[in-house]
Image (cartoon, rainbow, N blue to C red; front, side, top):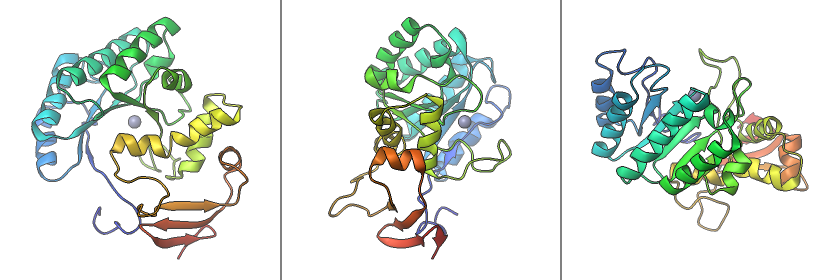
Length: 259
Ligand SMILES: [Zn+2]
């Protein structure tokens, strides 16, 4: 599928332990085998909430990441101080294994559900370890304070957690719409805040994914979306119809329809 649709979309595959590792024997082996077969990253999921085994879960996925030279995408829903302790453990392992810039924690509800002091001390650790925080602007669950995290040097970014799958009837991969949702959930009001929401769906994820030559420039990859708006904040607020969508220099959609 990744090859078949490569003209329309660039796909990275995360080998994801959706039903846990410790509680689903054999999963650790399958995760590593998936990487050997071409998956791009290894995933993780609530080491305590799902597996009840923080060190075992992290040991497995960090082990695969460092042996195979791939990044990590850990979806962490566990909230409160228990969730925060897992974020701290992830940052410590990232530092210890020299995986700076290769590890992302998605959701990280805990960062939005503890005291500001705890959030800030964890932010410093995340910034130093080079662990990025993804928030899709959740409808439920506490959202990490993305602006505060960004101000303290943490790479924050966004994405569609789901696109009309078994978990959610919503999601469409539309990153301008996603920027609006992040802004809405974060209670952004000012232009510079809407610019942050926009950065969270453009250059920030490009850095997290390690995309080379990202941006609109001569010699760039020419992946772009054209909208009618006076400014970026206006585009985030109004999400106008996409006049043109270009993938790798080729027009793939015009006025909202595939060509
Ligand atoms: Zn998720």
